[in-house]
Image (cartoon, rainbow, N blue to C red; front, side, top):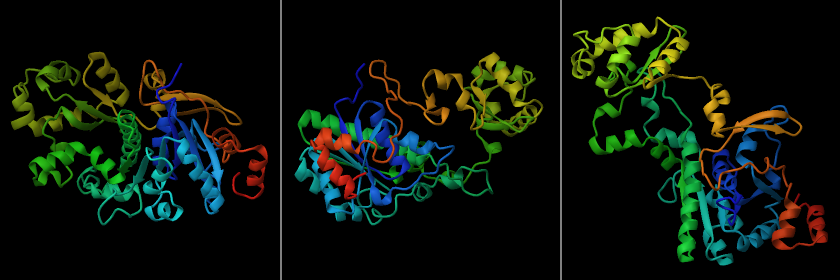
Length: 394
């Protein structure tokens, strides 16, 4: 079975987890991704029982070329690869890119229609364009961290902006490839952690841009919600939390009231206007008390039985054994040589005819150096052996 990106070759000059995830998405759908490891910067990863779980996710399905980029002969190998690849992806600081001659203008000389994707912290323009690409710094600028916790608690760093940005890196690359297919023209793509974090906070940022107002500037207590039956968390008897998502309370009220042991005709709560208006605080307190009377497993069973729009908030261990996640290949069960059975994140996109596949585990440093130089650049075995002996490649 063919894959969606079988005809695309990517040169991966990324160094961080999140940007490497962006190129891994391309590899999952068939792109030949050549990861360049800079020999002077190669070091042992953080291993768990001999298995680096982060590297496995970020580098799977890739080939690895290990080359000394501090040597001119090493940089020359990379430049020689440019005419043979469709896309170059990097997250290097601008100064290092220019120092090594790997900027967009220089690579266009080698391949005029190259797609050049740059993963940055704060975008390609402006006074902060050269700030370090750290997700915490970008997230701090969105204004979301102070409003995530309950009032009086420290700001919360959710850490999800970098994953939004990784997907945008893959998407931007695909858009540029599509445009080149139609026009024959390449271009430069920039995705930033600042934009990714802002996009992840779209609902709140867009609401503030449209309406302004101080309600967007402060955290909101869970017991100060406008609708007691939607977007509110309630603690159960065993300390786990139940999340309700029933904005149309008229629709859900009869079965929900029965589950909570309430009279659906209680005059305090017998209309949407009362439940979300004049008696809102009273209903919040009633529900808060009621949910504390039973453990989460009880509420899980009752919610499912009545098919209510609500669920129990799970812990981090839940997705690993979630039948739905396994069935849809969001979690993969593998047998890692030398390690044994392991689980890893799978594929977030389903395609019926050209699905993502795991063809190879994350490569070792330089595992494919000789193969890449022989197949793409037609280097002889003697020349490759000399490069290895001189420490140019590994």
